[in-house]
Length: 251
Image: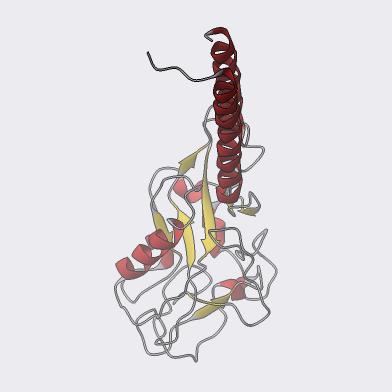
């Protein structure tokens, strides 16, 4: 019958023990690196909300089809697998689809509060995205200046966003996406310039887009951050200790 010495058994047990601990530690590290979404605080379980971000990638505004921009923001959201699973919509207008209509998702969507992926509130109601005024007296609670991967994009007059929209969420009929010189917004402000800043750049120039999620629901129970990997670490360590004790007794 095959057997190994006590010293060999103990070495193997110790090796497995440390591999388990290090492996679990790697899981914790990977979890932390991907935890780029903060559930908004103060929302009761079962309540609904939406998320918004500015894309980390850029796209030209030459297409007249809103589906092109919706597909782009969905692909951008997929770069952060910590985000909730949902459909994403570009806060943008073409000649045939306004931003207000594009982001509509039925039910209570229009009255859901909107947050950045950091948990910062943007507006108390999604409809307020299109309530900023030209005189700056009404503004977003926070600029949409955080990407889907939790990076800040708000350099002064540098982070331009294709919108094709006026500040009321309607399509700029002379400068929608797909026209020669579409409407631009900018992430450096929470006033109406965020969506309705200027025109003048060619649609062939790649710029960012704003994205907003479908309706999301606060879960009934939210696990502590990192609790699952830490539990796995404890189980691996316990298994290693038990195996080592068994190795000693079975000599």
